[in-house]
Image (cartoon, rainbow, N blue to C red; front, side, top):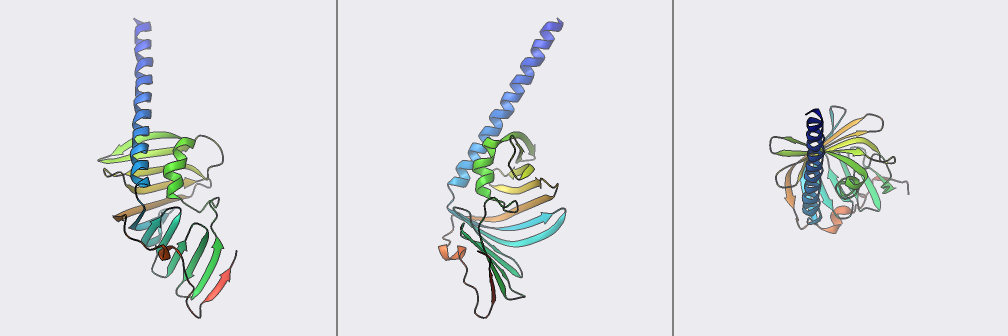
Length: 201
């Protein structure tokens, strides 16, 4: 009898693990299919660092790693090769090379397409929101764990990331507009006339 209970317990554990793995793989597949079908999007966003709002504004995103953030006094632009950071108050532009290895760079493309194969996945749920927790399966990734909150439309509502220094960063997205006709010029930046330019390239 005890042996039978042990066997059933082992079978239950293995079945639960396999179902969780399958569920995680299905979620990732749906998320990847949705994300990879989108050529560009815009959304409102808010970034919180260690519980305090650090950035809020409008995000424009395009393939590959093209991004534009429009904040109250700051515009940050990247074409995936060059970064521009324009401080409106100081009328100053800092230009630098895009560095995918920079720990401060959060790439949605990497999170969605690259990280799943390098991480162990834990599946969870809050109401109708699916939660995928990424735990690095090998050294080299710039975070301890990352959670993505996925709505029923297979879009990311929130990214919750804890880096190697135990800093917590949360980015929330809302008011998505998908496959907008966003000009390529959105992802480049020309310093305004009279602005101070600091070129770090």
